[in-house]
Amino acid sequence: MLTWIGVAIAFIAALALTPLAIKLAKKFNIVDIPNQRKVHTQATPRLGGIAIYAAFVLGALALAVYTREVAALLIAGTIVMVTGLVDDIRGISPKAKLIGQVVASLVLVQAGFYVQFITNPFTGGIISLGFWGIPLTVFWLVGISNTVNLIDGLDGLSAGVSAIAALATTIVCLSQGAILPAALAAVLAASALGFLPWNFHPAKTFMGDCGSLLLGFLLGAFALMGLSKGATVISIFIPFIIMGVPFFDTSFAVIRRLFLKKPIFEADKMHLHHSLLSLGMSHSQTVLTIYALSLVMGLAAVLMAILTSSQAVVVLIIITIATFAGAEFLGVLRGKRPAIARNRRQHKHIG
Image (cartoon, rainbow, N blue to C red; front, side, top):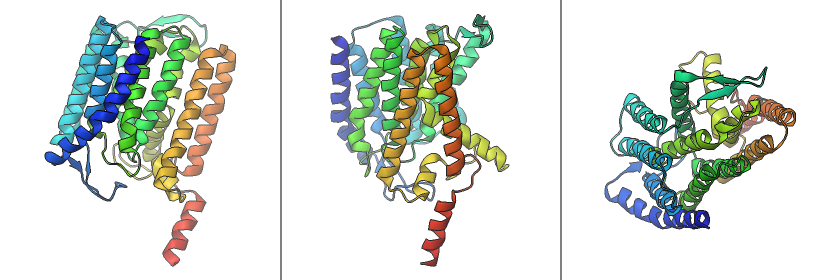
């Protein structure tokens, strides 16, 4: 019962607090200015992440589970949110932003949030990681935080994809008997969904780094709480499939830049949403298409959690092959637009 109260509070709070965040951003001129890499055409308030954060905290507290784990999660989440907020307000160096994320990750490690073992895919036995579980955990949390941040390129994209991932996490955690992370993931989904009406195209506000980094960090933490407890080989891959869209999009960006012999951290306009827009999709159509892909990934993760290991491997192989095939068709893998997109640009130029 308390879970549903927490979820309801989080949704209502995000819905009600986002307009206040918009007013605050406008008052202090904290807005996102359009440039050649961005899709929006007018200055837009970007403090929506504060509303998501506040909604999640209120919803989490309403669960009335006051454990060391929950306290560490809220403290670490606050550090990540504040780090992103400072970047949104005044801008900070990538190094400073990374330090904030690492510190937050270490807070979770101190509370027992870290990968202590992995399964041996050949024998099915357990491999203890010892000390190496700590840097692996930090790498996971920082990586997932930034993958969600990197896909925040269209109105409603990060919020919707994160909400779908959080719902999938809820279902998978429940299937594994991990009740607390399931409840917290449901609260996070509600927080993102409550923010979404203000963020969907045309967006009245953006979540900013304080929102996107927070969403990614919390989703990564829930994976540590619930999804990494399984003793099967396939359990290793479930978090990556749940975060399929941001994970693969970021991975393909690295592959693409290596293939084109460009710096890995050099920004480009070849991400998934850019490729879909080049096919002639509207802003909203592109976002809804990516939502659909996220739902497929989420469903695949749920299936992998409840099927036998051999059946789950088949699902994993199908999803992986389909993803790489789609990436190659759209050009996000090698940085080459599909023929239909190139023809559209040529016709537009001729016209």
